[in-house]
Image (tube, rainbow, N blue to C red; front, side, top):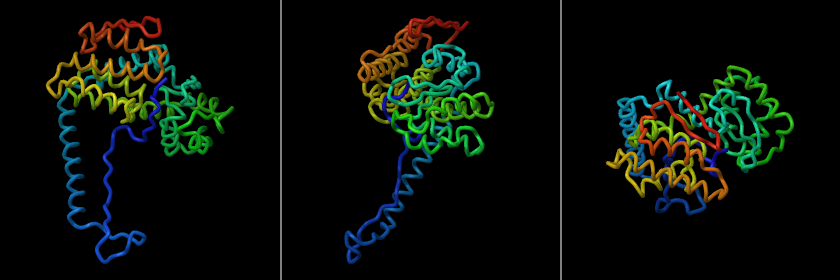
Length: 302
């Protein structure tokens, strides 16, 4: 129950740099081999890379100086429970390691602790990384089929054995740990990091995390980074001098509109009667006790 049809192969937007080639006067024509660009072009590329590294280092310093927020173990546990109430209709998020089902959203099988999908690359990446560490695992034999169906809703080569193999592997601590690590690498850590850099506290970090899980880390209009960009066009984030509550209200509006535009009949209670309820209560620090509703069910954390 996630993604907005955006397939992205990395957890965060990546600036791609490349060696530039130019046709040198007197050199080969358009059909011949190109010569390397000038020393000035190479120097410019290196300068761009250096600036990016410097900005990353500055961001790391800012993150280190910020309060732990959702990264603190109790708050992280709470975040997993709230997201699981929407993703798996339970607070017991650990019960979902062996979950696997095609929920009819066009993303193939949805599986595991955060809803990895066969159609959105993240499940394939999980199994590839797990197989590197555990070559003889019960899912490795399905890697060719997973690569073939990646980006589609097809089950070709996966039925009937893959669901059984997933459930069997999910009984192993090593595969559970691999699911946790991939969830953190692709969704939790990037969402919390970006939220902290935007000046958001625990509630804002949760809102970003849930959006990252549902929409995927895409840069298009329906991916997380695209939604963030749209929200920032309407309201400044706290790091830019804006009001945290106002910005989060706008972000939730933008996200809800994107969900409805893609699937008009979709239930948006994970926003309407959960995250927005916390926001309307002014609970920017996500203090417990918490009470919320998702899909008509009431959840409580004391």
